Image (cartoon, rainbow, N blue to C red; front, side, top):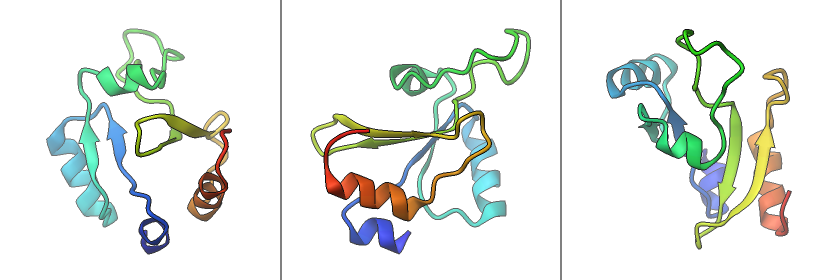
Length: 105
Protein backbone atom coordinates (compact mmCIF):
# COMPACT_ATOMS: atom_id res chain seq x y z
CA UNK A 1 0.00 0.00 0.00
CA UNK A 2 2.91 2.37 0.60
CA UNK A 3 3.73 2.35 -3.13
CA UNK A 4 0.14 3.32 -3.96
CA UNK A 5 0.00 6.18 -1.46
CA UNK A 6 3.50 7.44 -2.30
CA UNK A 7 2.25 7.95 -5.86
CA UNK A 8 -0.82 9.93 -4.79
CA UNK A 9 -3.42 7.18 -4.94
CA UNK A 10 -5.70 5.54 -2.40
CA UNK A 11 -7.28 2.11 -2.39
CA UNK A 12 -10.90 1.61 -1.41
CA UNK A 13 -12.88 -1.59 -1.80
CA UNK A 14 -16.64 -1.63 -2.38
CA UNK A 15 -18.66 -4.74 -1.65
CA UNK A 16 -22.32 -5.60 -1.35
CA UNK A 17 -21.66 -7.20 2.05
CA UNK A 18 -22.92 -5.60 5.25
CA UNK A 19 -20.60 -3.69 7.58
CA UNK A 20 -20.33 -6.51 10.13
CA UNK A 21 -19.27 -8.99 7.44
CA UNK A 22 -16.60 -6.73 5.98
CA UNK A 23 -15.21 -5.88 9.41
CA UNK A 24 -14.71 -9.59 10.11
CA UNK A 25 -13.22 -10.14 6.64
CA UNK A 26 -10.78 -7.22 7.04
CA UNK A 27 -9.72 -8.41 10.50
CA UNK A 28 -9.07 -11.98 9.27
CA UNK A 29 -7.09 -10.78 6.25
CA UNK A 30 -5.28 -7.88 7.92
CA UNK A 31 -6.67 -5.39 5.41
CA UNK A 32 -5.64 -1.81 6.20
CA UNK A 33 -7.50 0.10 3.48
CA UNK A 34 -11.17 1.16 3.65
CA UNK A 35 -13.81 -1.44 2.80
CA UNK A 36 -17.13 0.17 1.98
CA UNK A 37 -20.50 -1.52 2.33
CA UNK A 38 -22.88 -1.03 -0.59
CA UNK A 39 -25.77 -3.31 0.38
CA UNK A 40 -28.16 -1.32 -1.85
CA UNK A 41 -25.70 -1.72 -4.74
CA UNK A 42 -25.80 1.97 -5.67
CA UNK A 43 -22.05 2.37 -6.27
CA UNK A 44 -21.84 -1.10 -7.81
CA UNK A 45 -24.52 -0.12 -10.32
CA UNK A 46 -23.06 3.36 -10.92
CA UNK A 47 -19.71 1.85 -11.93
CA UNK A 48 -21.46 -0.84 -14.02
CA UNK A 49 -20.09 -3.63 -11.80
CA UNK A 50 -23.44 -5.34 -11.15
CA UNK A 51 -22.95 -9.08 -11.63
CA UNK A 52 -25.99 -10.70 -13.22
CA UNK A 53 -24.31 -13.96 -14.23
CA UNK A 54 -25.95 -15.76 -11.30
CA UNK A 55 -29.70 -16.47 -11.02
CA UNK A 56 -31.71 -13.83 -9.16
CA UNK A 57 -32.37 -16.41 -6.44
CA UNK A 58 -28.63 -16.82 -5.77
CA UNK A 59 -26.99 -14.93 -2.90
CA UNK A 60 -24.29 -13.96 -5.43
CA UNK A 61 -26.71 -12.22 -7.81
CA UNK A 62 -25.80 -8.54 -7.99
CA UNK A 63 -22.47 -8.84 -6.24
CA UNK A 64 -19.76 -6.64 -7.69
CA UNK A 65 -17.78 -7.98 -10.62
CA UNK A 66 -14.13 -7.99 -9.46
CA UNK A 67 -12.57 -4.94 -11.03
CA UNK A 68 -10.17 -2.11 -10.27
CA UNK A 69 -11.54 1.31 -11.19
CA UNK A 70 -9.18 4.31 -11.15
CA UNK A 71 -10.98 7.59 -10.55
CA UNK A 72 -9.06 10.87 -10.80
CA UNK A 73 -9.37 13.88 -8.48
CA UNK A 74 -12.16 15.27 -10.69
CA UNK A 75 -14.23 12.11 -10.22
CA UNK A 76 -13.63 10.85 -13.75
CA UNK A 77 -12.91 7.17 -14.37
CA UNK A 78 -9.56 7.04 -16.15
CA UNK A 79 -8.76 3.32 -16.06
CA UNK A 80 -10.48 0.02 -15.44
CA UNK A 81 -8.83 -3.34 -14.88
CA UNK A 82 -10.97 -6.48 -14.94
CA UNK A 83 -10.18 -9.98 -13.73
CA UNK A 84 -11.35 -11.44 -17.09
CA UNK A 85 -13.56 -14.20 -15.71
CA UNK A 86 -12.04 -13.94 -12.24
CA UNK A 87 -8.88 -15.78 -13.32
CA UNK A 88 -6.34 -12.94 -13.63
CA UNK A 89 -5.34 -10.55 -10.88
CA UNK A 90 -3.67 -7.28 -11.79
CA UNK A 91 -0.58 -6.29 -9.85
CA UNK A 92 -1.11 -3.00 -8.05
CA UNK A 93 2.28 -1.67 -9.19
CA UNK A 94 1.26 -2.09 -12.84
CA UNK A 95 -2.05 -0.35 -12.23
CA UNK A 96 -0.33 2.61 -10.56
CA UNK A 97 2.29 2.86 -13.33
CA UNK A 98 -0.39 2.87 -16.01
CA UNK A 99 -2.45 5.48 -14.18
CA UNK A 100 0.61 7.70 -13.75
CA UNK A 101 1.24 7.58 -17.52
CA UNK A 102 -2.12 9.26 -18.10
CA UNK A 103 -4.59 8.53 -20.82
CA UNK A 104 -7.25 5.93 -20.34
CA UNK A 105 -7.56 2.20 -20.65
